Image (cartoon, rainbow, N blue to C red; front, side, top):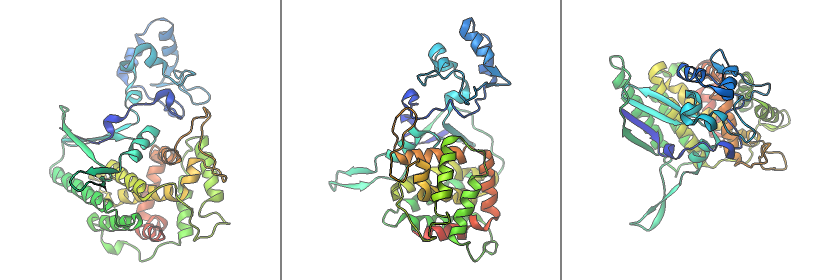
Length: 372
């Protein structure tokens, strides 16, 4: 089987107590059956704590939604007492994601993780051209491929050809993003137009007009508010967006604010979300919806990055309760990813909206891209 990962994948290591965040708060932690069996056989006081902290196949979180094994130093007691091999599957693998397409496996680091976002955004953007002795831009995103011994999944008849076509389309999209001489907004228009072309959807199914931009932003942020809140950080950001964001009553429809992100940041984020989601259209046939989502995700970051990062009106840097500071770009991506990508409810709402809501249509997305 072929394993494909972004080239920074092997550089990833959990920052543990050095992270400004933790995966041990706010998430329901399911325990696989093999780990449950292992935990039942642990003796002593720690074994008693383990048995009393598990119910219905998951750890019992305390009243603040904190895992019972997260200590005051921000470290996992299971890891400290029993070692890494004792971690249940989700604790050992998160925030990694895996998708298998027959004899091709793709893995990456979810953008809910600040270290994963840092690696994506801080990959070297220049390489040395020894022949010309000058610097040139590196690829927006690079991948590493190697053979592994995993057993491939079976693909139905004809699915292998469809998969290879999807991979080829994704590669063409990444080439569009590589064209740095063209402003990112224009590249994304080209990307979306290409996605329409290869989607197989009859052009008669597309409307001739877009919603007004203020109404588009209102609908976009409104749908994000329909999902269950990830927590206080999201509540604060969402309140700030509704009060100070582009569709607030006292904000001009044509007002543009400085974005936290460069064009290269945006191209990397779009490329990475394409890597994670586009090939999944092999299973649901919704290739265009995947592209609409990647651009939606980027435009929300572009327009509301400061609110998502928790930056106040006086430009106060982002800090958490531990007084650790974090790059606001990382804070913004991480929070949006948690609230959107890790909510089945929000992802389902968005999928339906891309298919049938005028404010989320191809035309509406193109309108917002043309504003920049």
